[in-house]
Length: 411
Image (tube, rainbow, N blue to C red; front, side, top):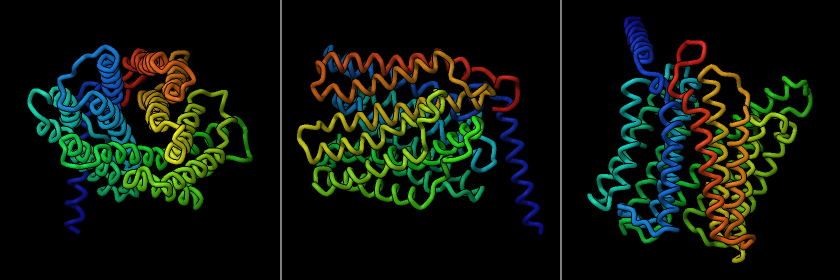
């Protein structure tokens, strides 16, 4: 009995401490989505522009990575990783019923991520080891914080935290490959992509049908409403995970190509069950379906690229990254920012423009290597459209992230 009372008292003390931190913190530090949803897109734009300056203009970057390796590492483990952190730090309190990480603890975690970005960019001056320690250390710290919250609440989402830790390990493998410690120079990069695609498949498989069902119900639909994941979804996730694992380990095997095609077809069937075409009148809902559509497209293209030399692998990779990852990121960031700052879940003109630009940019980036249009012109146009989407996001949503909750309250 006494032990139970002591545990309750400690829990109440922790709750009171977190409430005090949130009240004392500036708005930008009152929730994980705020600093990461702002700085992540800023870094995406900076990293893209630096890469284009290196690729087209011959700029020499002060990193120990070569230009292409740095670009893909930072877009994946830098930019995408930041958004994953912002999303999970915001979602976990909803899953667990505990207050979000805020104030100085959030600033320390964010500072670790930022230090990793600077250290890697300047790693040509002081070596790879400091960058690796800071960069990988961010994911270890983040996984420990997220794991503590999930375990304390006895929540079912511990596997998601496990994927974050695996993402950090993939990050470390990418450093080892660049340092020449691993023969396969792309295995860490492939593993990172595979894990993010799997995270989209798991989390997206929950939120897309859930938000779609809620919207359809409000519109008066009574039949054909999407349901939460069932046995079919579990089978699709299993096949997708196995296909991606094969791609990480044996990326050019014929069986890998066949497995990826099977996963892509199953993911397409899964998406069709959610009836996203019904939501075309509401951009903030339909964009979730557009973003998820890039997952089966990317898997199918990746499978074909292994079995057919006429399909360039880079198109498949960018369908998964510039397409699925970037579109789902913007779909989630816009919805979460509006919801968690107390605003109506409605896409205004700037938000619609964001969705259009990211879709056109991803489409151009995927088709540019196919010879449909000039490669360099396609690359430049895709880069401008893609970066423009994030610039517009920052213009529309940046002020919300730095201000207190609309109408007052926590968050």
